[in-house]
Amino acid sequence: MDIRAVILIGCGLFLAFVLEHLPMPDILLWLQPSWVLLAVTLMVLSAPATFGLWLALPLGLLLDVEHHSLLGTHILTLVVHIGLLQLLYRRMVMFNFLQQTGVVFVLVMVQQLLIYWGVALVSENVAPVTLWGPALTSALVWPWAYALTHFVMSRLHLS
Amino acid sequence: MLALALMWLDSHFPWLQPARYFTGYVLTPSQQVAAVPGVVAEWFSESSSQRQELLTENKQLSARNLVLELRAQRMAALEAENIELRELLSASEQIDDRVLVTSVIAVDPDPFSQQILINKGGEDGVFIGQPVLDAYGLLGQVIDVMPYSARVLMIADSNHAIPVQVNRNGVRAIAVGTGSLDELELIYVPNTADIVAGDLLVSSGLGGRYPRGYPVATVTRVDNIPGKSFAVVTAEPSAHLDRSRHLLLVFRQGAATVPPADIWKGQ
Image (cartoon, each protein chain N blue to C red):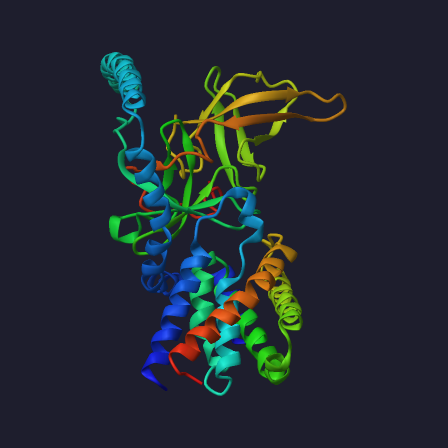
């Protein structure tokens, strides 16, 4: 893989984790987008052959520590997320922005639901999750993130 | 399956704690960068303060310092008297708690949990179960330690409970979080218990998790419902849970380990 692509991916993931951690005003807490999930989506759509299910292990572990969730929760959700993306990516790249936004909305909803179900399955301490808030904001952020990534990739002459 | 097995292990056993701790090293740079806007905003707010504001604040702090100095002088006499009385009772001497100052670097974005992240971690000796205070009272306890940061569960979290007693008469109760930052609820308080609005609740030290005698909350309402065994008592936390930026981590003598959950068994 091109060294510029590696740097771009590294910077993108770092930025996603910074934004995931960014302190927000109380009123906006419900609407924190799932930045890392968006970054993973961009990575899988850009290079589906390189970024497979293996990506779920390191990033899921980091997300579990970041959110203080049970270790494995985000690994599970990322495995499902990447699995669905691998099935959908051919259609996704053909979709227009509006359709892509809809798919991202559903994918983030699925992730939130899996977190809830996963924790309910193995632990009695189940906290409710905000289903639609992060899904909505992630979907709204998606077109911009997608366009920005493609702009940077074209400037760096990365396919 | 691996993910579900990990989740089950993590929810039932503490074996994965080292993995969590060392993963914290990887996350530290992004957490530090995420804290930059807050630090810059604070710096701007401090540097843009008007001279008059600073002078007024200085006067207020000087006056407050004077009052506190006066109290400290009285404290010295009271402490000496206390030690003397304890010696008379053959009780163990209470040693002052050692503290470490820390700052809040992030608030948990999950609106259902009242947790914050502080900028001191395992490298500074922070441990799980460590009590955290602000200038006004008990704020919570450390629930997760990373190398350079730690997660604090605040007393207002709905999963949190703390044994307290009324400062006025020593009546014991348990204050549980409601999920709202300005309200705690006292559970299992009999209708006949001598608790009135305005009573100060302090930590009772029972359970061995929190030190004794720190302010926890002030009772705001007591409702005695006829036909019910227990009164509905609500209290407002003394600590400024939503405003405090600088906090204190308390290191107590013999508090380096968390007492097991079944400590009461076999006694």
